[in-house]
Image (cartoon, rainbow, N blue to C red):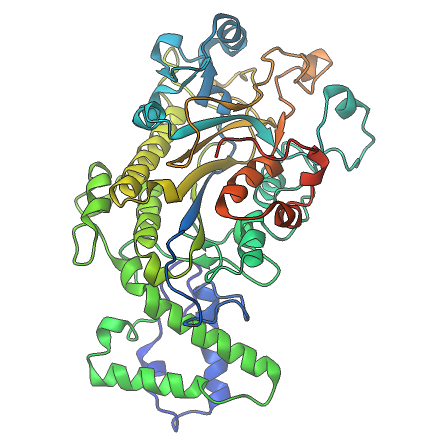
Length: 494
């Protein structure tokens, strides 16, 4: 057997041509061990398939879109009032987005990067919320407190400005870079959702819990599960016989409890692939696809291929939301990602701040999110699904010498969905002054505009999870640092 971490599992024909009498049960179990891992089934007790109710009337889904590398939030959401824009442009120089080209967010003192123009209808409909200056925090932190903190102080998050560590802190919602579970996974475990967090972007800390790993799905069009054991292949007697033989191998109880746990995982792995395989594989226009979804993604799918990876991922999520009766459960958390945001150089084209690598990435994000939101509205599920961004960290206000920006801390994010309280920004925007009250730097060489967050990942996550159905008491379990923020536990955008 070949184990493809994020792709289909290919079982060789010579392995599959068996019956119960052909091999010893334990030998087969050892040889098929990779299937459960490839299907993302790490939970023993949670995936008791067929024992839970199907889609409930109060269905809700959260969709995390992680912008890997550290998105430049300061060029994503830009102040438009005279004082704020002058501060921003005065430091950003050639990287500053011309005010006339920003997408207006009427009713606020901010505008969106022009590459996010596809999200303008969502803003105008009150379905988009910018959340300002969010980042990992153990507790509220002023510049004076940050500067006075002793080395390894609990008040300061671990290893600031490090990609890998800050990704963990965002996905885990904490200040400890050694945290092994994610806030999505902890919430899923606490609510005893039928499925763990479903990732369409490989494995992720965000979906990890003490007893679950994320369920990792391949892209649209891929086979999910074992070749030769797909539901549409059961019409062939030889395939049906092989499936029956495998089921018989996993049916008897084992001599050890660990063996029983293992066979349960294997049964669940096969059951999940049988249940979701057809949904995962469907492409736009194929039998079984939904016109409501296909029409929303039409501009991003041509010639049998999606225009971008994030479009394919969100199309996959849209299908799973639509097929929630098959996916099962009234609550589901999804994870997607877009890479490439570590824009140390060539963030913009010389003389054209609205062109360049960052603009290209934001257009991919905006177009895919807009298509996904349109699909949810077409399905009548707009109010039931909330998408939101995360990223390693923000970027420095001060550009570097390579037409790029460097690693910083606080960042701006976007929340999209029918339940969003649009028409306003949330959180507190930073002072855009080098060496100012929100910049960690004091000495001239360190005054680069690395903004101390004014809202924490915990508060951001608590707002999303509160809407999702996690109670106030449960929030303290999922987000242990939330208690440090007093009565300002949620940010109000849902």
